[in-house]
Image (cartoon, rainbow, N blue to C red; front, top):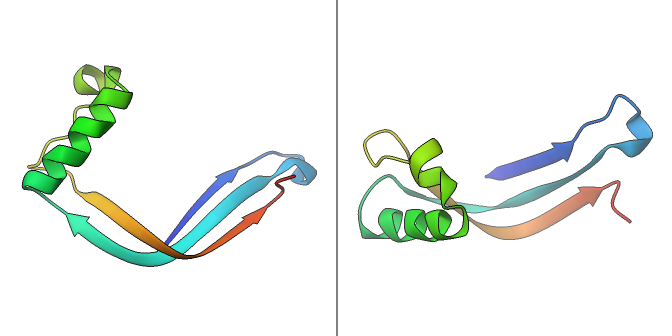
Length: 74
């Protein structure tokens, strides 16, 4: 599994990002899904009402990193 996040800019000298490679585990439902969702809602309370995450149509992906790359970071 690889997860890439980049902060794009039309000025390519300002592009920054990171890639995390690792093993992925999916939690489509159940106690672990609900525990992770509760942590997310605790950190971002507005998600509960503005971007609710339902077990019926969502999945949590947990990535255990094995390699991390970044670019444009100082």
